[in-house]
Image (cartoon, rainbow, N blue to C red):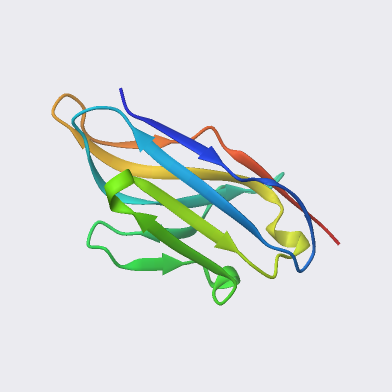
Amino acid sequence: QVQLVESGGGLVQAGGSLRLSCAASGSSFSINGMGWYRQAPGKQRELVARFTRGGSIVYVDSVKGRFTISGDGAKNTVFLQMNSLKAEDTAVYYCNSRIYTATTLFRDYWGQGTQVTVSS
């Protein structure tokens, strides 16, 4: 069974920074893309930043220049450094990964979500 475990959310003032972490754990799996989504109250879940299967990075326009995604392949971990936070970044942030195992083949996994609240 593969699990994604997130950490690093919290409350921060506008202009501040937070760093989110997400680690994938389990046995006999391979990661085919990993990144972060967010869902604000009353809104649909949206992509924030992601490593694609080919290793390129995509960001939603609203976070370009402020957020940076990075990863540690050896530890199956992805990070999201969030700088210059704005009130509109307030949301629950979810880690996502498309993971291959011999039993489930390709499947999307989600973390439990971590709350990020930016006070203005």
